[in-house]
Length: 200
Image (cartoon, rainbow, N blue to C red; front, side, top):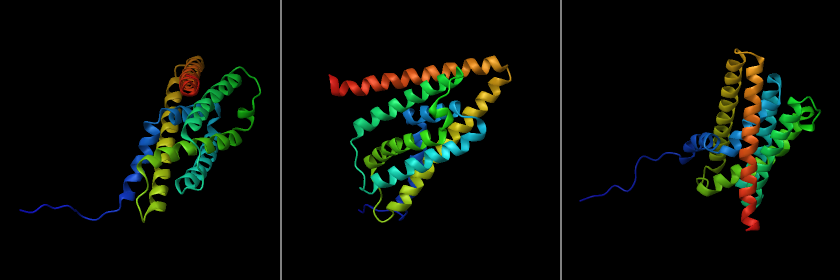
C-alpha cells in the first residue's frame, strides 16, 4: 500500500490575494472606515483619499510584516475603532456645514489613520505568516487583495448612494445621516469593548 504525501508544487503566495480581499470584506472595522471615507469626501476626491490610505497602510504593513515594526495589537484595535468614531464626528460636522480638519485635509487624515490600520492588517497577516522564499510576493498580493476589496466597497457605496439620490436629495441625505450614526455607534461600542479589557 502507498500513501501520497505531496502533490503538484505550487506557490502558496498565490492564495494571499484572496486572503487580502477577505480581510476587507470580513474585517468590519476596516470596512466601516472605508465607507466613512466615501461619505466624508466629494466623488472627485475619493480616488486620491483612497490612494493616501493605501500608501500609508502599505508602509506600516510592510514594516510590521518583516519585523521592523512591532506594536501590541490591543492598542492598535482601540485606535482603529476610535478612528472610525473620529471619522463619524467629522462627517457630521461637514453635514452641518462646520469647518473640520478632516474635510479640509482629507488626504492627510486618511494617510495618518492608514498608518494605524496598516498595523491591524499586519496583525491579521502575522496569524497566518508568510510563505518562506516568497515573502515579498505574498505581501504584495495580500496588499493588492486589500486594495481590490477596498475599491469594491467604495464602488458599491458610491453606486448605492447614486441610486438612492434618484429618489431625491433628501433621501440621500437621510441615508448618509443613518450610515454615519450607524458606523459611529458601532465603532464607539468597539472602543468601549476593547478598553474594557484594560479596565475590568
